[in-house]
Amino acid sequence: QKVILGRWLLTNPDYLILDEPTEGIQPNIVMGIADILKRYQKAKNIPLIIVEQNLHFARRIGDRFMIIQKGRSVKEGSIDELTDEVSAKYISV
Image 1 (tube, rainbow, N blue to C red):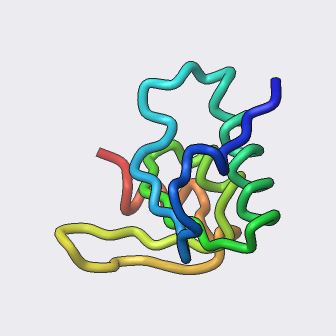
Image 2 (cartoon, rainbow, N blue to C red; image 1 turned 120 degrees about the horizontal axis):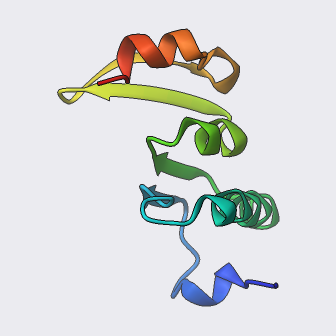
């Protein structure tokens, strides 16, 4: 299945901000979305800013991460540093 994400955009943005792009999406489709976004990012050389709780998705698509609590950055770094321990400390409810 070929999806052309560029047709959805009205202009040539400097960056894309996606808020919970996997929310309510079937798990078997989520990684396909990640692949599409990575291809789009590479083709357009455009930064993606993604607000996401699905860490598997975030790790697949991201290069860097930032955890924000109550409007303040509490942890940031390379996506390789977003370990399960970091997740449990800052993200788990």
